[in-house]
Length: 82
Image (cartoon, rainbow, N blue to C red; front, side, top):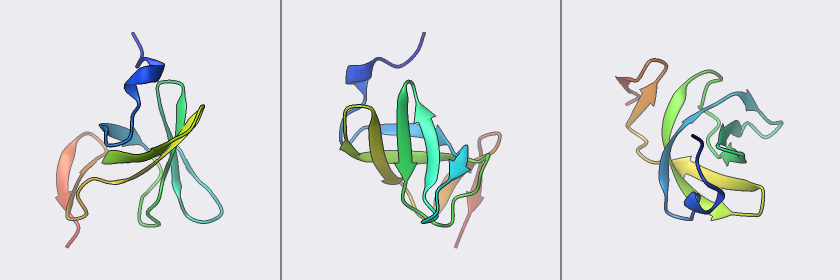
């Protein structure tokens, strides 16, 4: 069972696995059928981050890191980035 299209809304919080990075350093992942661009150059491919959706378009969305100090990474363990 996937995430429904109308479940992605501005202000929503999700876990996002970064599958790639674009030329500007944004992380790229998917939540259901939505492509999500994560604006933080410090994200790493393969890691999972807690994100907050900031802008939703028809087939893609933008997000930001929910908490800059702690993030869920890899297998879900918390790592301190301070």
